[in-house]
Image 1 (cartoon, rainbow, N blue to C red):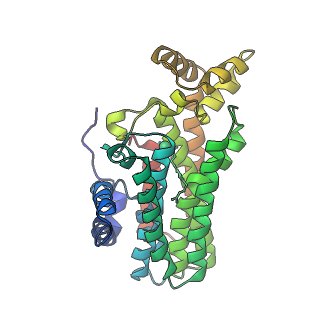
Image 2: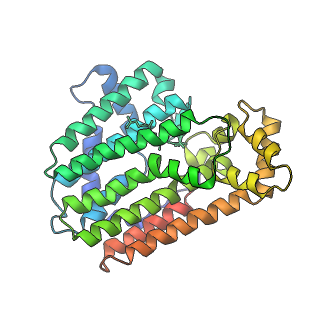
Length: 327
Ligand code: FPP
Ligand code: MG
């Protein structure tokens, strides 16, 4: 059941920039092909948590040009990269629900979703291309490479339990790279000191790792109503995530058997319930949550290298939200 949601306080410092971004997102489909315009209205009618643009605007406050309009261009570009990647990921995962709404592939079909993702990505790159710093433009392109590498690693992996290190490499590419780009790109664009740019990049990477581990925990034990997307898909499809890796490693003697069961595809509900209990009993979920907590702590340690400002406190609160969230 979804509880009433208080708006976290970390948004408040950058509300004017977020309002401008929401207006722009509502306009993404204007003048475009009618199918893209409908899909964009569908996607941005419910824009999600907007964590990445919030990171852009908060990080920029550590530079001398925090209010430059180009920051809204960067925030929009990276949010469009994120949305494009989710539209494509929902095709890959055959997902039918996202942000409490049917996915683009479910409302239209996979072909439309593929092209809508391409369209969004082209819009993202058109915005990035006119940014005034070539290193930030290059960073957007590098981030898309990283996202693709992470997703390709995931889809092309054989039925094998990855090591913790392999898992962390994959989520650093597919998720944390974009968080780092938001923080580091904004700080670069706003002309922050190089050591502050580096601190924000380190914060973004650790935060992104904490986010994805939490996401993978919620996929196992979260509530569909809170999350606004289906739960249990990773386990049902045999997609190994950190709680499962830890669960298999914790089993003496029958680790291989548990791994085989986790990796098998298209499981029936009784097997799913049984496996979920085995993963919980082995402490896999708890251990994954503490791994996310450690990345959260690393993110906070990176913030200590920044000047004490309300924005630094907001970034702390954002990190707390990322690991405590239920949605
Ligand atoms: C969600 O993972 C997916 C990602 C974080 C990255 C997806 C990346 C691509 C499809 C390649 C890049 C494409 C473009 C157009 C930039 P998940 O399935 O674990 O999370 P979920 O439960 O929210 O779906
Ligand atoms: Mg997915």
